[in-house]
Every structure is written in structure tokens, then in C-alpha cells.
Length: 457
Image (cartoon, one colour):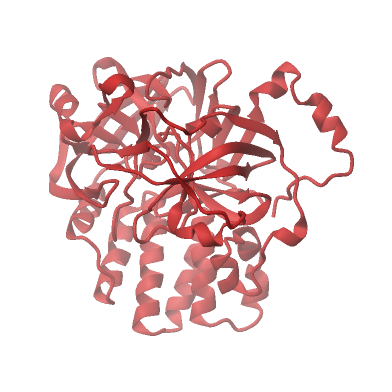
């Protein structure tokens, strides 16, 4: 949102006579260690998304009289890994070395990001101002947004610490749950981990008489980079089952920007989606076998990223580390609000796939705001996450936004094959194939013998 808000929040596929196959074959993921690229130094680890080794190298880097650039790279990796105390210490140590202006600006921006993710909006604003003073272009509305949030006690929890709610899935195939907002029950909310912020339609916001957050007028980027006007508000009360949350920030978007055309040219309207700014406060289990979602509020003691973490933050969105055709590492936006899993076309040459020309397909990707894009497809692709591989007969590719560094999006056509646990405390995505619970994988797992499973790092 901040230098430039991430574009995609909800993505659906509009198909007419489509030659794309939506099925995914799930099997245990095996690997060859020679196909996992490793960075030789902290900068290389960042470039190759070798982030587990990057954060584990802290003591070695500290012992070698590190430069501001090395401390900054380490701090950046730790911000991505959700290890905010370590990141704060290393980034401030880098600033104490009085680096060049551009390095100083990047360090300040990383500190602003980690304070924002920690809900410390005063500190985030201070560092954002310093980053701007040193040359980073930060939108004024973002500064105003942080200033307004500084006086709000956000995400105040009460009621149950854990509760389970029913998931509803229809066209489009994305998970929705019923929530209570202020005094209105049974508001349908889309669980959208790919959205930077929770978003509400202007119509519903007016109906609920939401408390507006200042007079801030912001702008989100649509699927094609087009600006979508928003303002901001606070939900006084949001109930997810018996879990009660007070003071939840949301962006409010025009109604016409929150609709899609699905099969048969039928319009689908979204009035409310739960974005990453709220979801980061939970451990979430999405059980697509029984259509049940479990939300567990994370307390400070629960925020202990694991040595084998595979969940990271990129541009304020959760990204899962994985493989393509058993090569690694790649980062994919974890997007429960996208019907489809796809790759970023600009990175095609970096992917470990046969040098065969991609084929055109006629599936149109739709984003918030009604924008659409078409792309190409590649065939017989294996995507690995956690201990499991999904084999796609074909997978679409689309052009990403200019500054996108992730390799694509993991969407619902992949996730729905699993019981998915997204744990922002342990920073892990854990997958349990639904077939595993009906005896579908036992025999295959026994046959694995001494074949290696994908390592944690």
C-alpha cells in the first residue's frame, strides 16, 4: 500500500470455451538437493529467497564487523520472516553506521514496515517520514493513514480465543464466512489472504454507518495498475463466531469496483473481505473437506517463527515458499481470494521448465475494479508447497505489476485439495491432503522408502 499498494486482492477466472484444466493431482513432494539454489552471502540469499538460511546466519554476520548493507539485508530478511525484534535490532544497527542516503532510506522504510506489521503506527509513521526525507516516494495518504491509526487501539480482542465457522464456497470458488459487524449479523465476508487490507463496499459501509478514519482519500492499484479510489473507516465491532474484535481498520471502495462477471455473465458482488491486515492476528485452518474454518487469536507468546518456516511477508502480503518442478526456491503470494493458481509471465525464463513456447488460452483474469487481463499457459507443471506437490495439466501465466518479485499466486484450485493451516505465529503453512484422511495416500507414502522429502530449509 505504501510506496505503491499491491494490486491484486481478489482474482477470478472468466472462462468461455476454455482450454484450461482446473484439476490438480496431489502427491508427496520429493526433491534433489542439487536443484535447490543457495545464496553464497546474505545478499545472494535474499535474491534466491533462501530466507531460512538468511535469518539463521545472523550470528555469523554479527561476528564479522558487518557493513550497513549486510545488516540491512539481514534485517530485510528478518522483516520478511516476521522476526521483528531481531529485524529492529539489525536495521537500527545499520542506521547507526550512517550509510549513504539511498541505503538509509531503504533501512528506514523496512523499519516502517515492521512497525506497521506490529501495529505500532506512531513508530511506523516516524520511520516513513525519515524514508521520505531520504528519497523514497511515499504517498501522502499513507502518511495520513498512519497518523490517523496512531490514536486508535486497533484489533482489541475479547470473547472466545478460538472458534469454528462454516465456509461457503460457490461461484466464484473462493471461501466465504458469515460475520457480525457492529449490530448487523450474517454479513458474508470473503477470506482473502492476498488482500493487503480488509475492504468493504461503500453501500455496506453506509448501511452500517461506519466511523470514518479522518478525511483521507487513498488510491489502490487495480489488476492493470489503474487507480481505484478508497477512503478508510473503523469497524467498532467485528465478530467471527464467538471471537470479538474491536477497532478493525478497513478500506472502503465504490460498489461498482467490487463486482465480477462469472459463468453465464452473472454478476457476483463482494461487500466485504477479510484482508491480511486482520488475518495476521490469527492462526487459521481452512478445512475444505468439511467446509469449516477455525480461527485462533494469536497472543504475543504465540509469535515464534519456526526454523522450518515457509511463510513470509512480501509487500504486506503473505507469501509461501515452494518449488517449481522440484527446483527452488520460489515465493508465491498465498491468495485464498484467487480462484486460480498462476505464474508471473515476466519470470518465464527463470522457471525450470522445458523451452517450449507457451500457448495462448482464453481464460480472462478479473481483478477488483472490473479490470481484466489475458495471458498464456504452460503445460505439465509441478508446484510444491510444504511436503506436497500439485501437478497441473496446464497453468496460466499473467503479466504482474511492475515491481512484483514473487513468482506467482497459489490460489483456491490448489488449496482446496488440502486442510490448510496458515499460522502467522509459527510462520508456517501446513497442508494435509483431504485424500490422506480417506486412505488415498497411505500406500504411496509407504512406497517412498528412502526417497527424500523436501527439507525445511
